[in-house]
Amino acid sequence: MRQKIVAGNWKMNLSKSEALALYLSIDSNQLENGVELIVFPPAIFVDALKNVNGNVPIGVQNFHPAEKGAFTGEISITQAMDIGADYALIGHSERRMYFNEDASFLKDKVDAALHHDLNVIFCCGEPLSIRDMNAQEYYVEEQLRESLFHLSPSQFERIVIAYEPIWAIGTGKTASSQQAEAMHKAIRGFIEKQYGTNTAEKISILYGGSCNASNASELFACENVDGGLIGGAALKASDFLQIANSF
Image (cartoon, rainbow, N blue to C red; front, top):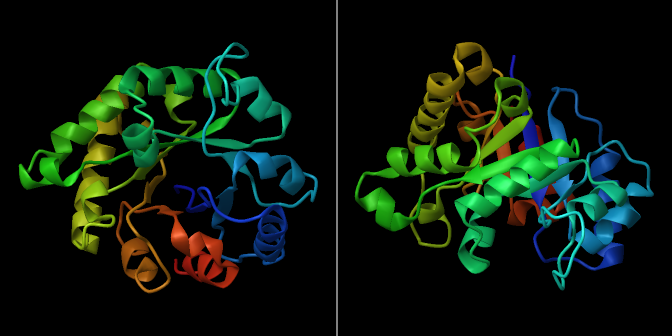
């Protein structure tokens, strides 16, 4: 049975005290449905949150694959590990769009994370222009092929996939649960074609398209949706936990 996961991407939000309060609120609530919670705070707060010694894993939203060097403003993979990161978010649409992270660079990040035993949530998804051409499956398969499909089966099984329908985020358009399931099923099919059924059935695929407390139950009822990568709704403990209890 695939692991159910609800991950909160806090993006560039919250003060240190707010981040600690939110983490403590989430960590103090024990779920009984077997869902794994993960939070991705701003990197400067990871150390403080780890010092709480909570049970909820903590990840970094970004890192540089080099162990050190002249990359002003960046956080190295070893520095991310040193502050206690459990997970890394790689390939998020905002990193691709605003910071021009291409497939080759994302491949390097994946390799660095796995080399240093950092768990990975890898994001993929298509913009509206691709969806309008009905080329979304080809587009997403290429994203996986270019940055992930060089991995061995055992390496790939350490990856969690998050599907982001970029065309439905902040565009006024809405992705239905049927559209979400169709893409998640397609993604699992790409993995099966590359690695076989056994590996494909082990991979958790999260939905990252404006998942919230009002639509989580419908989305999580889909056969190939194993959880969510949550944005805005992750900034309020009650909403985040309600989503996690939607299985």
